[in-house]
Length: 294
Image (cartoon, rainbow, N blue to C red; front, side, top):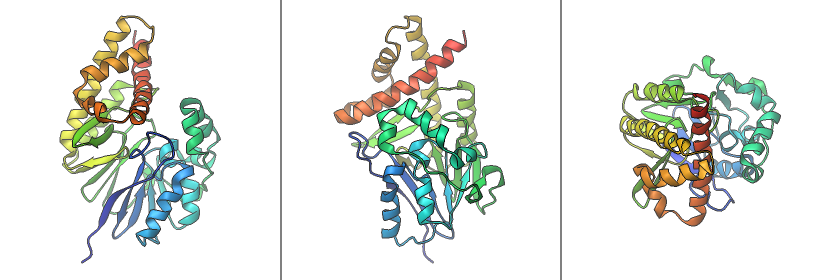
């Protein structure tokens, strides 16, 4: 009997520092699916990889969320695999059908990075399955808001495709690097409830969108939960010191005090710049949340 295949395919980017950052999890078995497709300007890399794997049929695209680096290339992907159906949060489908607001929001937040990723193409509504109606054998669809209100995770055959609900994870020269992805609007209670929901699942391999995997989901999620609360304490202390350069101060302090960021020192300059950019955006989520609590 042929074994199922489940691997992360890197979707290479032309932006300095964005190597080993964006990918698609590809599952080949009784059903064939991909988890996320990456941005528009690089989706051809994913299509080429599937062609090299002789994967001529894709049954489903499982979208963890509709952000540009996960769903931007969906329109082009469906042109190549028109038999595929997209499982998406029911509140996200309208933005795939008319991505104009999604594109403008991406440009406002990411600037030149969004331009490098490229604009969305519209998707036909009939090609989308609302997550509440997805009835796929052995697939568990889990609502995991926090990184985004429309975020989903998927569990299939002891693989937990967590998107960014468990943070961003990299292995750098054998050292773990774990970073929250908490952009505005961030709600701490919602994110903690999501982590607890995932920890309640059985132990399985955890598959991160950015970028890799670990064999023990429960341990990694517990570690991530501690980190989420650690960031809250650090950001609270910096807010107490005034608003000047608050994002830079928080990032610098986190890099000194968070042991899960230690591997930052092993990154090249371009990768460090990338991580500082996304760390600052995650800190911004905390700052706005904590200031609104006052």
